Image 1 (spheres, rainbow, N blue to C red):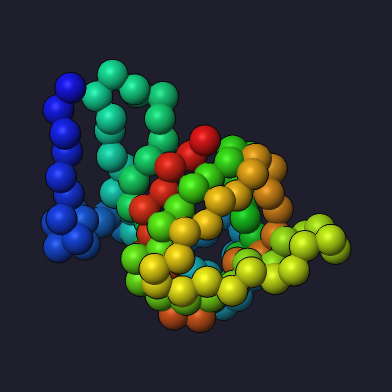
Image 2 (image 1 turned 180 degrees about the horizontal axis):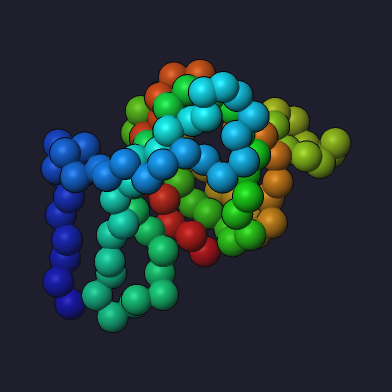
Length: 117
């Protein structure tokens, strides 16, 4: 096993343009930059860094997700009437169960570390 250390500066410098969000709700569509991180002996684990510009879009992910917000702020409005809008900012950690649906509102460019579960 080899421990990987990815400094914040290296992660920022390594982010690659990944186009726009899948289901934009604002104009212009949110722009994405990403860095996939491979974990030795766990090729099926989907993890990495993700950055998104300001705007709104629908979450279109079926898997669960754990994320740590490094930078930025916004909110997530779940489709379920039973759940309140979630406000988040740099330093927050969010846990999304599988099939969480709703709308992201990115007010300040967001950069996060994510692990799909």
